[in-house]
Image 1 (cartoon, rainbow, N blue to C red):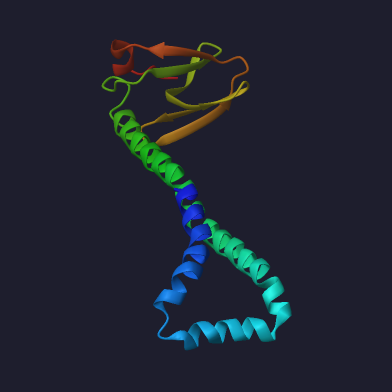
Image 2 (image 1 turned 180 degrees about the vertical axis):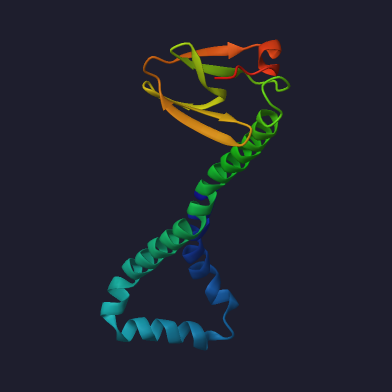
Length: 159
């Protein structure tokens, strides 16, 4: 697409220069342009440079107008898909440990349950679990995470 636009805009001045004498209404317009360039040798000397600079400004304008939206399309798609996946996971998590398809964990410290739920974030030294609308975060030191099966999830242990 970019190559086509570059070729188009590069060829446009050449095509215009070739066709303009045939399109002009009489010789007055063509002669007027020649007279303008003939009377101003500095303008004639730098006309190509001016056209090249205008061409590059036009390409830069095209680039800054159309490339950022094209680059942002994949991130918008990713955001939409991520939001949909998060909503589906949330619906599944809100069904509870006994009824959801996701793995439910029980966090145990010193033989007592300190939290249960679904691991939503984990680092080497901390973990965050989500359960029925509540999020708990705690350090993993001296904590054992145990996967709950459906039968154990139905009757939570009372601390």
